[in-house]
Length: 87
Image (cartoon, one colour):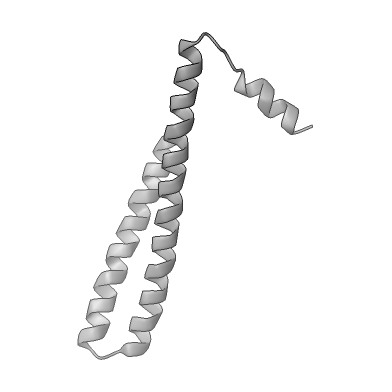
């Protein structure tokens, strides 16, 4: 799961960098229509990156809670919990 998030983040960062390059090129060529399209794409990518950042933060918080529970001797079987939800 964590590897997937980092892979998605790397992909989004690469796409955002390309958008920035395209925006700069469009600006130099005075191609304002293309620049607007690329800026819109960049905004979308930024929202995606923000969502991934929130996922990472929530995951980190969940892992801290799980570690604290384990220290207290509390065990949770996430597989059983997941099966109960799909019924």
